[in-house]
Length: 164
Image 1 (spheres, helix red, strand yellow):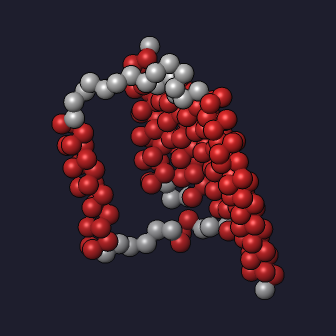
Image 2: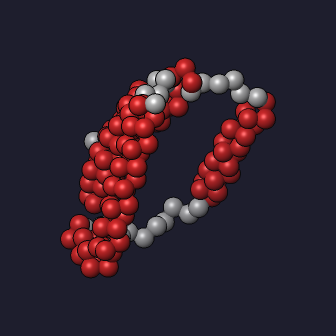
């Protein structure tokens, strides 16, 4: 059953990533990215990484994608302005990450397959929550204030843009 779920989650993640780069409309690309993020969360669940699963669903597939869709709808991005003709140099630059990926895949294939197993209780939510609250609570609140100020700034800029 685990192999079946792994193959399906992997297929959905790849299909969502391909949809992200191939759809013309930005909202369809964002929805494809949500499919990919949820599939990756399923892969985390298969690895018994409950904390990463919850973070992936709540933070990435939930909050960040809702914010991305909100910004796309707010800016009223037209799909016609997203596609441009590419020059030969730009196509070479786009192919460069594929070459780097090939080298990384080659080195990954050479790695030995005997890895240590994580100890019991690794990745649980309670120790992570205590660590974050006691060591990084103030920084977390400052980042939330910074993001709120940035959102207010975007709304103010766009309000002035739409009025004039």
